[in-house]
Each structure stands twice: as C-alpha cells, then as structure tokens.
Image (tube, rainbow, N blue to C red; front, side, top):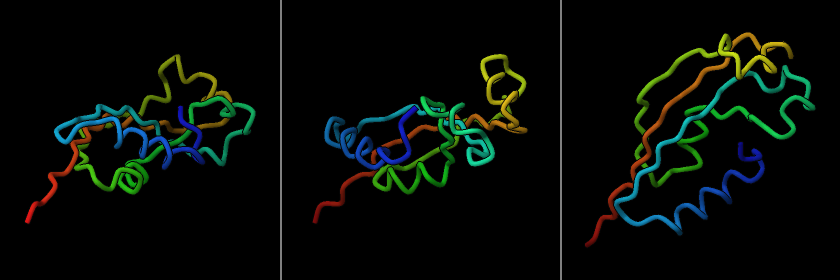
Amino acid sequence: AINPEMRSSYAAVLRNLLGARSRILLIALEFEEVAVDPSVTRLGPHSLGVDEVRSVFIDFDIQVLEEHDVIDVDRFRRLREAGCRSVNEHTLLLRRKRQETF
C-alpha cells in the first residue's frame, strides 16, 4: 500500500527500473477512504482507483482484467467494521507504451 503522496515517485522508480517491453500486474483497491477513520488506513491499504493509476502511469497502456466488490472477504473486515460499504478490487495489466522513433 503506497502512501498516496508517494505514488508519483514510486511510478517514476518503476519506470526507471523496467525495460521497454515490461509489464506490471497491479491489484488496486478502491474504496471511500475519506469516510474511514484515518487510523484504520494509516499503514494501508489506501484507495487507488483506475483513473488514478492511469494518471500516474501515463506512459503505460492499462487493461482492466477483473473487477470485484470484495467488502465481504474476511481480509477486509477492518474496513467493513470502520464503515466501508464497498471495496472494489481491480486487477490491472500495465504495459509500457511503445516509444515512437522518427
């Protein structure tokens, strides 16, 4: 669970480490984080929606492989007890866009 303030930096590190044909399989949880007591999410998980992934990884094509509401899964009990009504789990495949050469 990457702290939201560090996401752009984290994406930059990945860009530098990964080759031109690299792929990333990302499991992102999206929920109403502002509705949850901050002490519950202090160490994660943090909400991360598909639109934010697209904005942070602008040089990657992003394919949504699966999406499920997982609020009833036991590992999210803490979020459920904190008042979350929905936790959407997005399975994403990120592929680096091809660099155009002229």
